[in-house]
Image (spheres, rainbow, N blue to C red):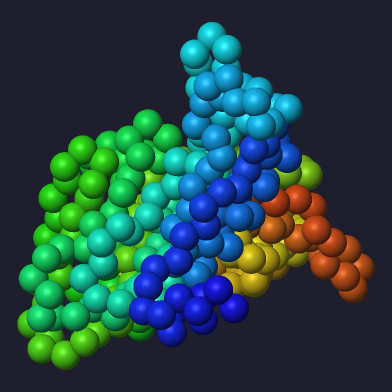
Length: 290
């Protein structure tokens, strides 16, 4: 209802106070839920409170603020609040998402070619991997086709200018993901390692599974997004050679691989591991018997 009111009055919306929670996992979850809900409606927000300053209206004292009594920041709370976002958009934004687990950011907007100013993204340099060249940036059409752009960075502000020759409004999708870190995990009787390989020509991430050792088990690897949707499946039957699957155009930053083994007639889940934020690259997964 408040969003409809703001539209009818042609004004912005602002969530003027929320929080007042302590530096706990429950507080982090509360902040995450509220900021994501506000983000989905492009609503600005302010957390209560910065510092206690002897506030007699609350029983929480300094615990509701962002600092401990020794002046050190309450890291859980600050990390949850230090979200990347787009304060300036060269067009009309239609979707904006930030993932505090992967520090990945996604923006979809109807680009207006008559606007000569860039789109600006705030990247917190301490909490959100916003340092120069510590991230991958991809700008595509809604269909996943890469488009040309230039970028400059001034402190925590990243400026992106679409340089395509389209004279019409075009729907663009931007993803900013931290540089990928290769890793390894041990699930059931398998050692699974993963790394980033070559860049693709679109916003789709391509997953290539390479069976290292020959084993008799039938396995499935299911790529899941942050909302629990299955995007693609790779199935390995015994000594099957490498298999691939490809994501749809990236909209939700952050992915999980679920590993299933066939037991009799059923697929039984053996575990899962996070692939973090995938972005326009081929990713190699190697499976070996432990």
